[in-house]
Amino acid sequence: MSKYIIALDQGTTSSRTVIVDNEGTIIAIEQEEFEQIFPNSGWVEHDPKAILKSQLNTLHKVLTSSKIAVEDIAGIGITNQRETTVIWNKNTGEPIYNAIVWQDKRTANICEELKRKNLANHIKKTTGLIIDSYFSATKIHWILNNVPNAKKQALSGDLLFGTIDTWLLWNLTNGKVHATDYSNASRTMLYDIKNLQWDNKILEELEIPKNILPKVHPSSHTFGFYNLHGVSIPIGGIAGDQQAALFGQACFKKGEAKNTYGTGCFMLMNTGDEIQYSKNGLLTTIAWGINNKVYYALEGSVFVAGSAVQWLRDGLKIIETAEESEALADLVTEENPVYVVPAFAGLGAPYWDMYARGAVFGLTRDTGKNHLIKATLQSLAYQTKDVLDVMQKDSEVPLKTLKVDGGACANDLLMQFQADILNTTVERPENTETTVMGAAYLAGIAVGMWKQEDITVDRAIDTLFTPKFSSEKRNRLYKKWQKAVERTKNWLD
Ligand code: ADP
Image (cartoon, rainbow, N blue to C red; front, side, top):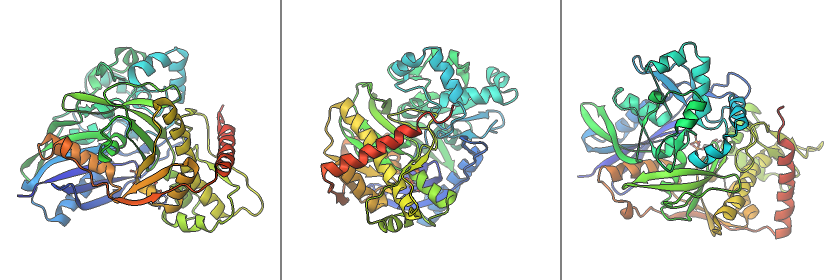
């Protein structure tokens, strides 16, 4: 009899649930957006209950539309926006503050304090990360120190911290399981990725009581059970969205890499079971834990990518849909003199500047909205080049093709420009839902539906984009981009 896996993909802008059959084919999908809350300049929040509601709505809808019996669901996998921080009261289940989202910059000054205390080396060596407000650690500190009574409640054992996977897991198991996986733990800036334990020194520095932290397990593991209409379904897989995409693209071997164009842009390269530190501004992170082993990755994180396209749509209102950006950008036939540096949330890899802010360069009297649209799309490709260049330096592995996925990789103009500016072939698979597939595979392996070696990912290629620019043109355009980036740095005092 056919068995199925349900995979939950809790993203930054929407929640999705898919059902995957035992051939690894997605047979049903539901998606729901939820509200982005911007209470102050540089602050980004989500309502944890709205996240949970949208996730459960899509889960129930997908079950109804697929008409699959609950008894035929073999397991559930979860993948999630990473670093986003929730703290809730374990007695009432109520969050004590909104979720502070990974893009939120309010804790930059707490990071400065850590740097002043010379903790950068310790943090890099232990957690693999660069001190930045991006990660959960300083967000936890902020909530505990800014919500009345929070510190006291935390010390008395009434509060729990979780990234979004943990928040969903706790709710799906009716408050029974407070846990996360290695990949998510490695994004908190509190986790020792070598010794696989929470780091006491960083906890002390940030005054975070250990009792609020979740237990950490391998990514493919039975975390607990979700009771759905009287049937107990094992929750068998958890991984942060970028690590799940690496798994979903079947980048199982050392040196294999992918680039995801979602809200942000994230390039990850599998470095096998060895920790590799970057000399050029990349992060070291846990890829996943499976079959009693832990695997690592190098990561280049770009904070603003697809969300710059959302800014064109919702902020500037010069496009109606993200898809429309392609046709309008295509109307600019000459070389685009305009550069947009979307440093809306500072700059991530490889620059790590929390004080950079966005800017537009090269405006002249004849600049029109299509130039801005094209420059915004091009900024995704330039940022990817920034990251790929340093990844090649660090890993000494020349990349022959770039495997892509994520919402914005549907944009042909962007993908062609990406190939042109990298001078590398860009490979877009037919199935770009690799993040959610990663979560499905991890869960399916834990419940015995698949073995990792059996996962012959359907690598059917949709399009190969091959580079066309001369090296003179590529270098000239990229130099201008680098000049533009320099001018956005350290904008805030
Ligand atoms: P996430 O999982 O981070 O929420 P997705 O992978 O679902 O993101 O991708 C959605 C993002 O991709 C949005 O920010 C959207 O603006 C962008 N996007 C979607 N389609 C296109 C397109 N055709 N061209 C450019 N950007 C797009």
